[in-house]
Image (tube, rainbow, N blue to C red):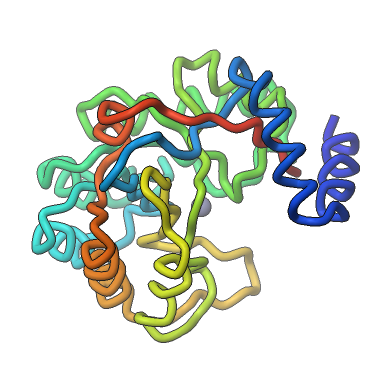
Length: 250
Ligand SMILES: [Zn+2]
């Protein structure tokens, strides 16, 4: 399965962009039963998703930035970090944000047997629901790595898979304005934005050091100047039809 997925992904990367987009339209049309949420058909809103926390350094300052802009977000947390920083998780809930699951830790699910994906995700969901006091509706696979089997394991636990349609690539360093500008250049109505409060980098790599609170401030200002407001996923899909894509990558 994983080898087949890797081959298909290599093939996809060899296609010119317009072919990729055409292939995606065809696959998405028949792929709803195996689709991952990646955008919504709404005007004036984008879904803001924040991954890899709770983070002891950046989550609380980010909550202040969101409050100052009157915006909500969906936080895809790692369960082991939620256990380590339960007060930050509860502060996020108390500020009115939505809590979702990003996994027990940041292990690539395509590297695990399906039985382990199921067991780890079930445990992680229970831990996060217990700590946050709210049911978890959404799941995002670490690195966006997903096989059909890992997808089905997550769906079996009653969660919907969420990927993204735009990102400032904030796992790479840069000045806060420049990082925000990476996504503001071509953000569209209904996009789901992937961002991070506590970015988990592979062992040996160095984490970016830019001021994340300043980056989120620039991002929310830039969205507002384009007539867009950031919101949590539950509000995004309540405001217009959800859009799904067949998203499988190693
Ligand atoms: Zn992540």
